[in-house]
Amino acid sequence: MKTLVVGVGGITNGGKTTLSRRLHQQIPNSCIIAQDSYFKDDSVVPVDDNGFKQYDMLDALHMDTMMSDVDSWQRDPGSFLRRQGLNPEQTTPASADEDVFVLIVEGFLIFNYRPLNELFDKRFFLEIPYDVCKTRRSKRVYTPPDPPGYFDRYVWPMYLKNQQEMYSMVSAVVFIDGLKPQEELLAAVYNEVSQEIERLTEKD
Image (cartoon, rainbow, N blue to C red; front, side, top):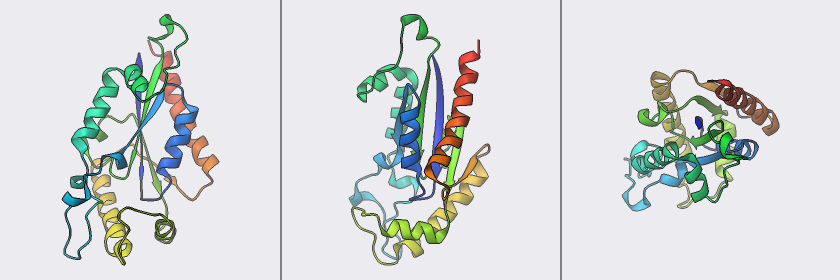
């Protein structure tokens, strides 16, 4: 059994979830762990001096739980897939040792958490401009909803801060233009991941 951990990070509303889901649909023996699933309860998320909830930071997330789930996948990807309601696509018992299991981890701060970042074999980071990001964000429905001024005074500044932190911590990131057509984005990422799967398959 061989494993591959792929990180799909980037800006809010940059297309991470869509790309990850479509990648998962294309790759056998794959599954997704999404960082947004690990937010702490709203009641314990701190508030800044402007009264804005500080969601865009690692302290707002149950990273220990997320890492526990990643560790569970690493120990036994097949069992993890079955618990997710997915069936490993193994044809014969003899082929099990040759199969490559792929974990797609997607989220806005996955490369800023060092223990998680160190696990990635491939890293992709989606970028879109300020105006596009703001427009997309305004069309999304959040619970709780964004208060007035939240994007300009909190979300975007935190994105720039987290991005600079990522630059200081991470190397070997493939930056992707999130404005490109979805099919083009999927093809580019799928090609790179497929090459890595092929390399692992051929490896003794």
